[in-house]
Length: 223
Image (cartoon, rainbow, N blue to C red; front, top):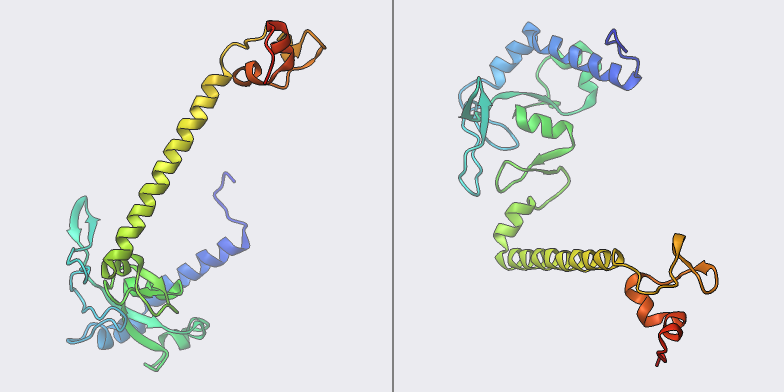
């Protein structure tokens, strides 16, 4: 649509919800709630346990998470906000912007996004998202904790790669053989055999071995 209008109902609901969230988070009541609970000394995310302004670091490897800001690569910093745990809080402004209750919690913006997707941060590295119902850890942390399984996994990967390489090599050889000139002089246009006016069922690489007409013509007895 040239005018840029949107008619899909799902897209309209998404745009409406995002506009509503932006309006609510600019509301003085929300800013006051955030100031009183998320931005006070000692406040931390209830999911990843990071404080406001703390660098986001992989707790397993010690590597800092990087991002681009104004064209420069910088370390990601934790930003705390208010998370509403149930969808009922989104129904009305009174529920979303009302007094502090058990439906609200302090968390960082990253974990807030994970929560909306039904995920949570890995309890080991505190970075990679996993399913909210999982009781374990992310795949990277699991393999780091079980080096024998990691070694076997890498060996299996190498085996698959080599198997695929050999398969591709075999198929390439078949294609090259298929491009060879047909050895039988009876082989005519449109793959027809001049001896019986029927289509030759053999490829160039298999005719000399399997075709009785070819053997008879050459005076060879097939064993």
